[in-house]
Image (tube, rainbow, N blue to C red; front, side, top):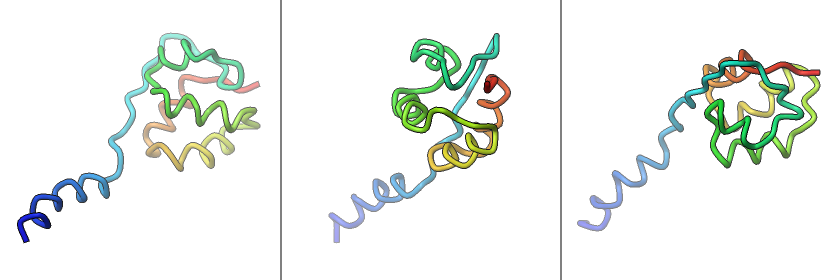
Length: 87
C-alpha cells in the first residue's frame, strides 16, 4: 500500500498535460528554414525543434496547427505562429 501511495503523485504528474510553452520573438522567422539556434531563440526546446524538423515543410498555418497540436497547447501554437512566417 505504501508503494502505491508513494507512486501516485508521480503517476498523476505524468498524466498532467504539459505546461504552455513560452514563446517570445523579436523578429519573425521562417518556420520552414529556421535554424536550430533561431528556434531556440524564440523559446523552443530540443524535442519541439526535432518535431518541427520532422514535419517540414509546413504548407500553411493550418498545417502547423494540425501537426504541432500533438505536442503543444493551442495558446503556444498561436504564439509560435505570431513569431513565424511561412513561404
